[in-house]
Length: 248
Image (cartoon, rainbow, N blue to C red; front, side, top):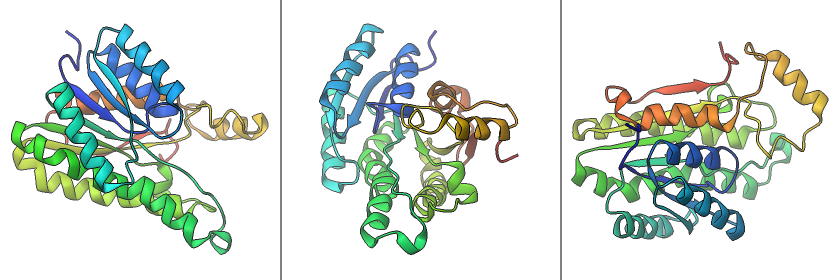
């Protein structure tokens, strides 16, 4: 029996990186997948095809999670198309790194809107369906940076720390309806975004991690499978660190 057999998951920001890795692993575990993308329709089509080939139902939606109205519309369309919404993975995120003295107001607002407000928008959008079903698992993608901060990332750190407070509050509000809400705090995960970095710097990062390697999208996806499945039926309001021991 596959761990997510027959469940429907919405994954935001899934056309690349961690989101894509989550979609691939979820499909392998039997979940039907509705995923969002912001730019590349080509990458979304390719992912749709790949997921469908794994024997599950999959559909990509061009939708901006930072928009309250688009999030509501997305949830309605997914419910009509798939019949249920069992899992929500709030993964959409951007960075606009700079020292505080150089961050523009626009760059601060953008990061908060895409990374943090999107979590509110999407959680609000699926809440009614999950309440009716009397079940659901919401997984919010935070970061080690949201836990310990990082120079040059005050906007990103604020958005990811905000997700932790939001997660714990939602867990307290919705627990009595059998809706669970947890956060994942990934450490240094190697994706196409990190491939452009200087190899020497990347190696220094790897050396500073107790497990001596960067994580893969699959490492994060496996933690998501656990939190999305019934194996974690008694776990809510928690922050799971997937960071190779970075914050130990």
